[in-house]
Length: 164
Image (cartoon, rainbow, N blue to C red):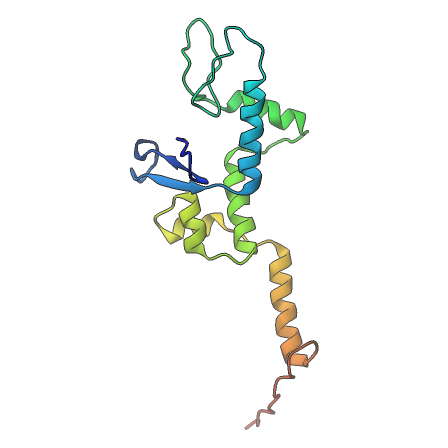
């Protein structure tokens, strides 16, 4: 991802997306804070071979065979994260599904969620966005309140159906 100095978004180059289009990713305040902390930690490293700053948020580990590029493979770091968090069976891709589900459960539309995920087809986004129980429960409670007239809503008119 490239950094833009005056923006609170990052871009993913078209050559790295399935759609072959530039993908702009807005960043939340907590993410911007985390990135600032990562940069601060990098700035505090002692002088030495790894002291020069990388243009990448997640630089590659330097070895005799590798240069100073960006991190390409995340299986090792992800396994270490899962081990430290005592998680098993959690895939990196599960984070995308959770992100989409949180947004859907918060009431955001599939087009908005799809734009954040870089999807061009609504059907793709629909496979990612699963509602949590809380918004489903709230929706059914809302219907119950309307039918019974509890809460702020007037009771619904109940009409007897004539049986023939």
